[in-house]
Amino acid sequence: MGDLPVVTGESTLANSFLGSNMQICVVTRDFRRTMAGLAKAGIGPWRVYTFGPKTVRDITYRGRPSDHSMKLGLAFSGSMMWEIVQPLTGPSIYEEFLEAHGEGIHHVAFDCNHIPWDQQLLAFEERGYAMIQSGLWQGKVPYAYFETEGDITTTIEIFKVPEGFVWPEPEEWYPGPP
Image (cartoon, rainbow, N blue to C red):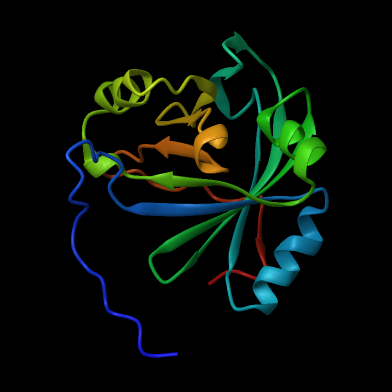
């Protein structure tokens, strides 16, 4: 097998809007096992949070208000953010995924070339992708997931961390603080 060509640059498709991949998320039934495994592989340290009605406003699931919650871990490997999600309460797209597929990579997040939030939402709507879950973390970081799995075999998420955002202190660091 020969060397693979190096591919760089922007997409040349006229309808391109996704931009760069920012995050890969693994959904699991066992948050601690998955976090330990990814740390063993060299990804971490992990910031651990609980997302739910106390930390997320305007939570929706399939177009309706929701009060689902989840354990969530965030870590970086180079410039790539990794996320681990374990659903805790209420119906969610994570529960759906576990029932349909078992554990694994659930979604990827894109920066949509940093276009304004409303334009990002409109770009998905114009392509026929319904928003299936959303929220506003810490009252500052909007996120939304779109029903893209039928076309691309995974879900796409977008989120927008505002300029100057200060990460809240996590509930814990794993395996320890940086």
